Amino acid sequence: ATMPPLLCAIANAGRHGVLVKSAVVMERLGQVDAVALDKTGTLTEGTPRVTDVRPLPGSGLDEGELLVLAAAAEHPSEHPLARAVADAARERGLALPVAEDFTSTPGVGVTATVDGRVVAVGAPARLLVAATDTGSAPAAVLAAGLEDGGRTAVVVSVDGMPAGVLGIADRLRPDAVAAVAALTSLTRAAPVLLTGDNQRAAARFAAEAGIEDVRAGLLPQHKVCAVRELEAAGRKVLLVGDGVNDAPALAAAHTGVAMGRAGSDLALETADAVIVRDELATVPAVISLSRRARRLVV
Ligand code: ADP
Ligand code: MG
Picture 1: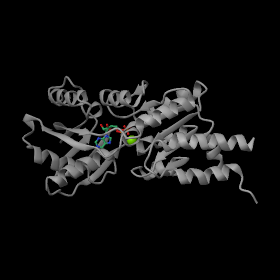
Picture 2: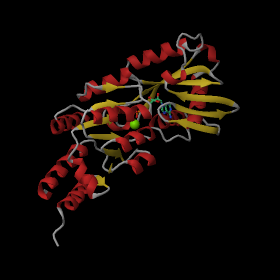
Picture 3: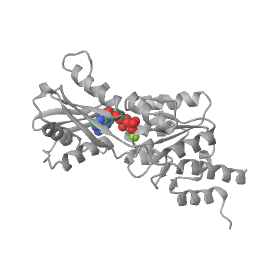
């Protein structure tokens, strides 16, 4: 028997490094006319590095102590920022105490008890309740300075008080510009960037990649809203993401695609297709494959 076109397309997608989970998905990939991209780990490489360790003067902590508390709290997390913090502590040869009562909130950060102290690490916008508060203002100023430089800033608080800020830098994927250009021409619209990170860092990466529409500071349910909004306007949205925070939006989108290498298990399970070769340019490639196969089917 000759293989049906959609099955051939799935085999071809596999050769391009994309695992498409069914013939239905293979067909749907060719229908999309809008693309939404996550930032950390999708538009960027997702292997960020800690560039700045800034304890607050009132915290009584030095750089090493701040990093130890943050890294111990982050140790159980699979988030790319958590790995960056843990790596920074390891590179400095710091020994990490074991964290207890670990919790993580997608799009926000983590908390854990370290040496009897409650440590929280996460987004300034979520951890610093009121930037005018005397405890929060110095941390907010530090974070804003780092974000102006294109960094992701995370706040470290100890027993509810801001204790310091870490600056974390990521890089645009080498094929991001080409992938965005190809997606723009295939869907006749530039992709939208959806991120839980700050507006300043997001806008910088977006501009470098050729994206104008940036929605920053989004919690997982806000990413779902952004997808629904596009679909309510009649678009069939392809969402590409990697994190636990992307899973609800991957499920809500017409087609959800997960980055495989550093993607969370939840994203990989929820997505309709998984990018196994770690390249964003595989996405326009499979859209083209689907369109070609559909021309053969109908
Ligand atoms: P993105 O949508 O760009 O992939 P996330 O939604 O995963 O980003 O994270 C959004 C923001 O939440 C991060 O920029 C960071 O400030 C905070 N955050 C999330 N998880 C963590 C974590 N494990 N450690 C520190 N900060 C975190
Ligand atoms: Mg991500």
